[in-house]
Image (cartoon, rainbow, N blue to C red; front, side, top):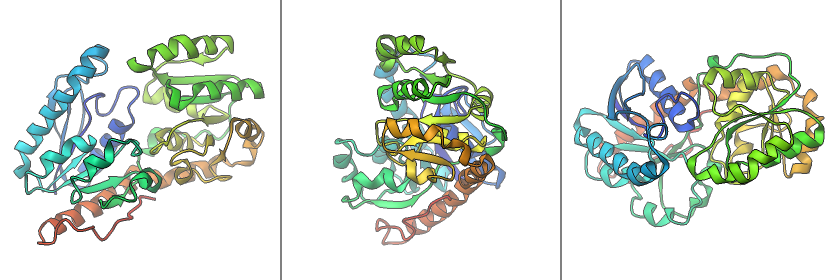
Length: 364
């Protein structure tokens, strides 16, 4: 199968440090290439793939532009990339977009079918008016919870495919460490302040590996940096994949406090792959990724997270590692291959545009 994969331009594929969507795109591309598919990756020029790389910018945007440059130029750079993809649409059997609704107007103009995976939150008020204009385009969600805000819209859900990663990149650590870990972004919705509160109240060290986006710099400076300093939090900044695996594997538990409808939470499966259980707040898709009392403890408040720390020894680290196997790159690629075949078959029929039959394909 000749497949075009369209990645966001903000980070390289795979990212050198932080980058959830880009890491998933890379994992999918590599697995598809292994299976003999002809994969062309449209991404930044500092990306790497065993398929064919078609760079549409010299380098990834976040590390090579100022905040103002990125905010003003990134929409145009993504539109330029999409125009280049769809100019070559006849070269592909299928186009798989990971840049959300920006793809939709282009996808309607060519006979080559497009599958769009929606990686972000879907409860935003501006989305329904856009999506109503494209009821025929095949969409994929990461979890069923993610798509719930759109349940009333007549959309063409081609499937629900959980993110997958190369689990072998995360070494199993059978013995827990003596610190708590927080990995992700420093931003209000990820609630690093709640992670500090949990660690402080249970008297354990907290290690944080997280990026700070330009839009969150003031939040870091005014609120989080002083909080970390006052509570002796070890802040590591953005870290490489290897450092992140060592950090998660050496932790007693990973904290996942959050205050937004999390679409997936890649760090959950990264932690489990190392054998480290997760203490998480029950927001967004957490309960679809974690199994309460098996791979983690799902809580409804910070108080419950504090109490959950004492319950971590009851969770088996080997079981956590086994739970991560539900989210391998191979399982993810299996699900996408099924969706690709289904979408291509539907495209050749006069009734293309109706709901696809396999609306609940979940890579688990």
